[in-house]
View 1 (tube, rainbow over the protein chains, first blue to last red):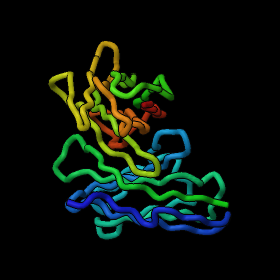
View 2 (spheres, each protein chain N blue to C red):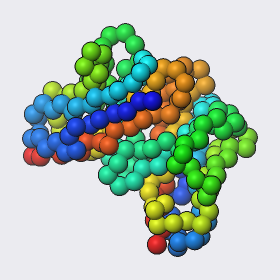
View 3 (cartoon, chains in turn purple, blue):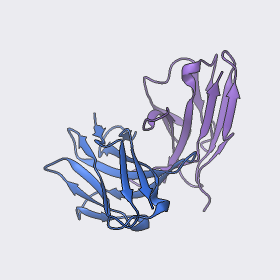
View 4 (cartoon, rainbow over the protein chains, first blue to last red):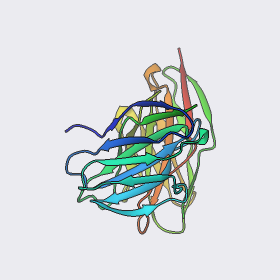
Length: 115
Length: 114
């Protein structure tokens, strides 16, 4: 069983550009989560999908951020008009379909640097 | 809402010594508790979890944690650490109802010295 995969692993962009990250969850996991982790801090929740439905969104998810999971499999996180404050590690996690505790398994993350 | 406090930002320890990483939480509902480990430039790996039942939970790599409801704590322990245990350790909590998001502490950097 392969783990959660994320692409790209690293992204360097200039302020004002748009970026898009992809997350592929573990096969058969129907729940998918996005978190953001800044240097020296623990991950902070951004948003959560069950199948293709986006069920929770954090206040951290400003209107420049949008996440999709169109077919209930992979997900994308887009940041428009990037700012230096968006520099962080973006982590994706998934949890199994029949697990009532929602134990979350994380991918390797995408490290974003905004110059 | 839940919150997590990891009191120690860094814990230096010598190889083969025991270690305890402290985690306290607050919640108005029953909780699930997790410990994750993060190696440099990698994602988070699940070490162990407390869901219900026995308060002593055993995880991977020789780690264990004890849930103490009266003290709202979930401290992580290992009787003898290795150099390879050097990493960042995160405690996380989720309520057993409602929101599915994990709330993480700020992490404890375990530095194992030879």
